[in-house]
Structures are given as structure tokens and as C-alpha cells.
Length: 166
View: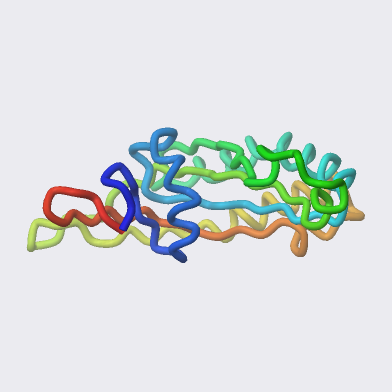
């Protein structure tokens, strides 16, 4: 169980704890894409990460062009080892990575006879494919399909005795 200010994500529990700190940044968003760039060196992380940073607005625009996505917000995710740079250079370079959280405001589904909302299927596969294509056009030598992974996350709020729990 997490604190009552936590949001739970339908993903692994460690990710729930990891991303819960971004609830204040995205209080109204329920749908997210977590982009993770895995590099082999700090130099590659800086070069390729800079390219991804510079093109993330393209991804946001592609997503917002979808009729059901009203808006997107992008936030870099601070890695646990970037805040603690006291490790040896070998430790810091062992798994260099950078992450971004893309929050999406998706229109709710249709109202059901029960009064609740039905699911709103939104396919963002084409948006992600076009984003990867934009990256490949800028750097044809990097395999972005291998280096840059994405995971869909959905916030689920469960109320138990007046508190939010995971």
C-alpha cells in the first residue's frame, strides 16, 4: 500500500512507486507513455538522448492530431543514479539510460446504460511509428527500435476507506 496521495498504475508495482512522484505534474492525466532510451555509453546517451529530446514535440503533435487525444504533456524522468553521482565512472556508465513520460488527456468513452463510461479505444501505434521514422531520418545509423523502448501506462485510482491505495 502506498500513501494516500499515490496513484496506482496498471503496470508492475515498482513502476507504480517510481512514477507515483509525477502525480503532481500530471494530476488530471490517466494515460501515459514511458519512453526509455538505453545507451551503451554516456557519449551515446548524450548524442541520441539530445536528438530524442529535440523531437519529442513531434511525438506530442502526432498524438494530439488524434481525434480523441485532447492534449499531451512531456516530462523527463530523473533516473535514480543521476541524482547520486557519487558512484565510480564504471558504475555510472554500466547502464546509461534516459526516460521521458508523455501524459495524454484522452476523451472519455461513451456513457453506458449503467451511467458509467465505456472504454475509448485509441490506437497510437501509427503515431509511434511515425515518431521512430522521424528519428531515423535524423540519424540513420542508430537502431531506435532497439535503443528506444516505450510502455503504455494507465493510472487507476482505487478508493478504500477514503484513501487512495495501490
